[in-house]
Length: 291
Image 1 (cartoon, one colour):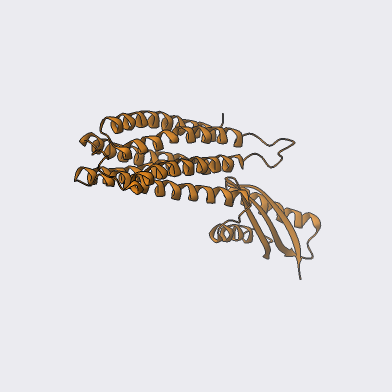
Image 2: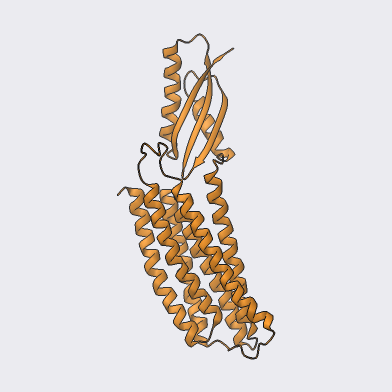
């Protein structure tokens, strides 16, 4: 197991344990304190367990070395895991939103129970724990540059946001507005849907060979131009492949150079870029003669 997998497995294991404990705690609190919003929040936390398992599977597959059938590696499997995760999030959000909408549209709020004080405490604990998990998972994702792990971090953040909605709803219900608890569940639906959309969009961008941002491309150009013998950059194309970058670059050199000299310049550009930019998995350098 490489360092990438070790970090991912450690973060994922902590996430699973924390989410199992938290979801059970919130479920029992929601039942005994008569809070629909807290029960909805518990379901959201439980879904985090399944999403983390999806992340683990995606990372394990994406870490496999290149083979005959997959000469460019398996990095895109991380994107597949992120897409599956966004789907789980979206379905969870829609389910919670549907249940809340039915309660609100029924117009009969007299049968809605007022949540107990314990539900307030559970919401505060949930906010603190999930926000902490967001930063912990985000740190791990940044360390190994994992889009799937970053998606899981945002799953934690969406749970923290939904707990804030639950807290507001429970407080409103206890102040004499029982419908606030159902309204909070509806707000949770929108938080989850937004997180699902962001994760899905990021994964799709990486699946369809989206180019790097301008800052990265300018840094790549500057690195190439800094090499001895390079007179200019005629073309630069980049594509994001999972959490890696592929680069195609055309450099301009002295037209009177021998083939061996031009090849040496291209090699320097190739080695300097792959050495300076850890995310660059492969670079193809083409040499044009200067007029």
